[in-house]
Each structure stands twice: as structure tokens, then as C-alpha cells.
Length: 326
Ligand SMILES: O=c1ccn([C@@H]2O[C@H](COP(=O)(O)OP(=O)(O)O)[C@@H](O)[C@H]2O)c(=O)[nH]1
Ligand SMILES: O=C(O)[C@@H](COP(=O)(O)O)O[C@H]1O[C@H](CO)[C@@H](O)[C@H](O)[C@H]1O
Image (cartoon, rainbow, N blue to C red; front, side, top):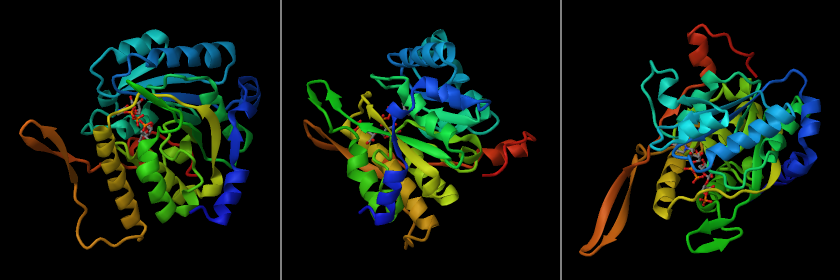
């Protein structure tokens, strides 16, 4: 449950995107550079509109964003072509630091983006958003430009659940409500003020983002919250109300596997921080079941996530000087 100190944090470190119009953010920008990164796996339907909107409004009309980078995360559709046509710089995730064995997942795409972007501030935006607006970017960048003490800003929003034959205004964020929020409240109550802890829209200072590990699957958001809070403290983290976000939804079974990855991520942090002392190694998989004509078929899934080291270590080892340690 949210401790009193976290309630104070929530009132002090919460803003609305309405406070950060592009014109104000541009005025605050000075010589700070901003990279927008879109991780994209099979997002040809939506990535082009998002890139075009950011380019036209926040690069060409009002100079807030300095580069738009799409990380093509082993897509099997036309994502890369659509993104490039819209004006993004596109990298295939396996072409980045290609001397390292390639890993899978969203976190791998985000981690590798740090090696090919240059912005002092890095903004992450999902590529499957169906109601993207420029305030998804300005609302995250504005607080970082206005307050040098801030290291990281997370978006929050209402999350409608729109499926083939149904619509409910607040039932999205299923893994958040069923797993991430209870876990954070019980093990990291100082983080219980994050309204959408798994939101894919957030921004951070490069020197900070390069100083924490990146979990390579869907645990990346959960891990960043826990690891950044440990590194810089929650008082250097904030959140902005971005209104409402609609995105493409995965099946319940797919979210079950996502939950497995997030639980594996949380276990590792509980162990690392001494919150739990496991008697035996965590299991690396889950078994799901599908009903068939002859009964039930069991499907085994490996949900153990890998983890990349802080990017600063990797780049410094390659002789690439990095911003000072936060
Ligand atoms: O291996 C992956 C899985 C996902 N994504 C991207 O990460 C974002 C969030 O993923 P997804 O939509 O699958 O998660 P959900 O929003 O359903 O939780 C989207 O832009 C995906 O294209 C990615 O780049 N690589
Ligand atoms: O918040 C959630 O429960 C999941 C699933 O959302 P929905 O139930 O499909 O609206 O979506 C998020 O989780 C992923 C894992 O952290 C993030 O990568 C996604 O950006 C985010 O949409």
C-alpha cells in the first residue's frame, strides 16, 4: 500500500502533459539534445503514423526532437520500410553491436538503441500506439528540461481495452493490474505511486540510462523502475499524465508469458536486494494449457529473461567516452 512518503512523492512529482506544450518545451531545450526511440516488432500498421507525427510536429515545425530512431526488433513485416519512409533512422537490432551474441525481446531493442543514439535525453515510445499524440513526447521531455535534478519521467494514462468484439474504458494494463502493481506495492512500496509501472512511454537522461542493466524481454520496464530507484532514488523520478493510450493488445496467453518474464525479473531483484532468499533456483519456465478435441495440450515456455550490462561499461570497453556517471 502506498506509504505516506510515496503519497507526498506523488503530489510533488506528478504533472500533466497540458503543462508541457511543444512551444514551452522548445523554449526550455537550449542545447540539450533529444532522441526518440521506437522499439518495433511487426508494427507496420502504426509505426509510420507515429514517426510522421513526431517528425512533422516536433522536428520540422517546433524543434524539440533531434533524432527519431526505430529499432526493428526482428520484424517479419514491412516495419523497417514503413518507418524509414516516414523519416525515421532505422536499425535492425541484430546489426547493433553485432559482435555480441544477439538476444531477443523489447529490452534488447531498447538497450541497443543507446549505442546508436546521441541525445542527452532519450525518450522511449511504443510503436503500436493507435492514438499517438505529440504530448506523449513533450510531456516526458518537459519535466527533464525544467528540472535538472530529475533523471527519469514515466508516462501514465487511462488504458482502454479494445478487442475484436468489446471495448472497456479502463480494463487495459492487465499484467500491470494482476502482477506488476501488487508486486511493487508489496516489495517496493516506494514505487507504488507509479500509476502505470509497465507503460512503454518514458524518458531519461542518457548518463542515467547507460548506468543500469537492461532486461531483454518484457521485464525491461519493471527492472528499470527498480534499478533506477536504487541508483538515483525515487525523488529523482517523476511521472506525467498523458491522458489516454490505446494500443494493440496481445492475447491472454501471450500476456501470461509476459507475466512470467516480469516475475522472473522481479525475483532476480528480490534476490539481489535480499528481499527473498531462495532455497533453490527459480524455475525458468511456465507450462500453459490449450484445450483440444481430445482434452488438453500442455505447452512449455521458457520465460527466463537475460540481462544486458549497463551500456556505459560496454561502450567504455570499446574506447567510446561516455557522459559522467550520475
Ligand atoms: O521483441 C519485442 C517485443 C515488442 N517490441 C515492441 O515493444 C512495444 C511493446 O510491445 P507489445 O506491444 O508487444 O507489448 P504490449 O503493449 O502488448 O504490452 C511495441 O512497440 C513492440 O513492437 C519489440 O520491439 N521487440
Ligand atoms: O501494462 C500491461 O499490462 C501490458 C499489457 O497491456 P494490455 O492489457 O494489453 O492493455 O502492457 C505493457 O506491458 C509491457 C511490459 O512491461 C510493456 O512493454 C508495454 O509497453 C506495455 O504496453
